[in-house]
Length: 484
Image 1 (cartoon, rainbow, N blue to C red):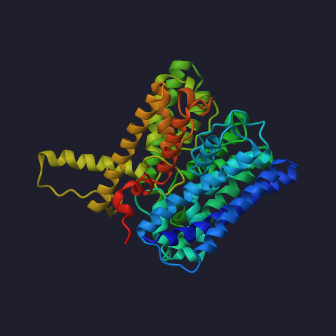
Image 2 (cartoon, rainbow, N blue to C red):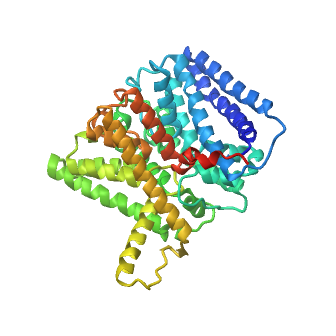
């Protein structure tokens, strides 16, 4: 493995990420906030460090191998969060760099778990940076640079495969770079549309419309208000946010086929899409009935609350309008299950993904059938596609690794003295990139009370969950580091 090749392109990546800090810097200058100096210094440090690394390793442009791509992607996300925490540190937003790093990692991985106790008191630039990191991480910081820089065309397929969520990376065009550009164009287009709808139809301020949009499309969940979307108390705003959370939770390849190729049949005949919509509808109805029966809510209020939070949690966005931590046991348990299921493959959502759930159901049914008919040949199909045994075994392995990580994380968090509800939900919420959990990390609280060791565990969960675990844990295998 050629470490200098990886470092060379990491330098370019960090130089580009330094330039993204100019966006909140501009807002800071517009509002006359003193944090503009913090962003200027942070941008200089990040871009300067990147350019220095780029120059020190100049002249070694080479094609990425699969191992080098894994190392580049994991290293890129870690460095982005380490440098992304610098504005918080220089602005004095948090009492420690660990908290700043936690917030930055939560942003880039679109988790939305925060250690910020007082949100409304923060300057505009800090709030915007929190949400902008989520927007950058939603479609992927590596895929963004694959789209922008032709240099990443060498080995780009390995990079995209290591970063984009889902069992399989669907190539929509002949060139992987064109596929990535198409996905980013769709992502940007949906973001612009939601911004104008929130601003004009929703009647909220430009800044609020921008931050909500930057938290919706990446299914991130950060907002500029302590009460999240509940601060606006608007059916229109909630309806717009529900619509775009649902859109963000759908495979962007299907959006491409629908909007660019004009093939609506490919969307509505897709098994994962149908199951995704069915789970959203079914969970909304069951939770609403539970709220009506247990809390005595009206039908309208029950469906308004259940519908919003079902979509928010299953798409792993993490917005809230009420404190669902106070809901009855069944409703809270249902939300925990949805945190594990997650959104569609190829979406900006996290967790296991609906397509894996679908394939696991089909695999389980095949095993049951083979128990009484062992000679039967039962292929596993998703739509018209017959899945290879390699893909099926990969999905089973990924699921085992997911739950193993979840169990180990839960045991560690419990050993730190946290109650079981908090320990359980904090790991589920960060591993699935959801954000708010239950107990001490519920939607009306934050992660401030988590011990330092626990925050480190949850940082690992956020990164591993966003990069689909294998990209991160592959680096722990001794054979990965054999130089050849």
